[in-house]
Length: 344
Image 1 (spheres, helix red, strand yellow):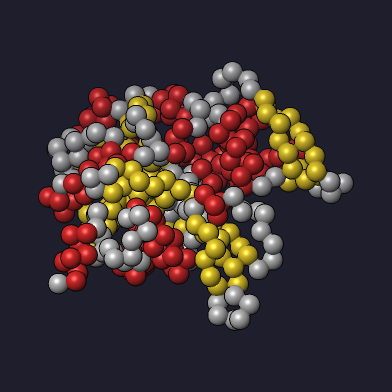
Image 2: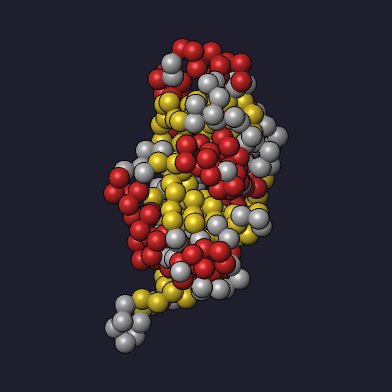
């Protein structure tokens, strides 16, 4: 009886549990939460393990700035759970935030996961959600949710190709008849781009910068193509020789040079998936093109580079950042579709 009452009181949730950001969609409310997937934990001086200090934006502000005894953790690595307990605490925080801090809720939850997730990783996601207070958990592959969110008809017998460039992974999939026909998933996304910028600035200028600075550089002047308009930006970090703070001026051409390797890996993944695509579906993709989604797809000129390298039409979804969570939300509103596209 209590379970059914809690179900009536709760709004079912769709969650895009990303390496960089977690987005939460509540039924009848829309997008209710979009925060970084970061948790700040402090060691308990009484030897009782660790306690959660902050989650989301507040925790991200602490990245690279914490004293000893406090650490800012990203519990999702490469699209899968790396720290079970911290993920559970993070999910509990997002569930309560979506339900205005109420603890008397047991929502049905749809969670988006990478297409090549292992059965162990699936179980970890499901158990984390159940421990955090979910009544029932459905897992939906991210490219499938992204295709639904981008407005594609995933139930039709036609081929749709989706490229989801996330924080930890890039998932490429060909979808037809409510299923993924062929896919590839590489552990290369926005975070690898940030790492590449950190390494480039270190190598070229002997200056060490942090993750947040690298992300700002990528968003402000990062580009996938060497032919765009030149932009410049001040980068602040620590001089590795003198050991003092230092400011250098970087150009968009330099950042493009830094990003050549991760962009090459994404293009290669698209080529690999196209090679495995059945001919009839490949013919559909020639007509319909490739849909780009995910926060990483917002990198300037990434669509231009993919168009040049594949010779296919490339379309970026209207809002690449939220396409996955809105797709999961649409599936949540249509239980018949949800049962077709989710997997055990």
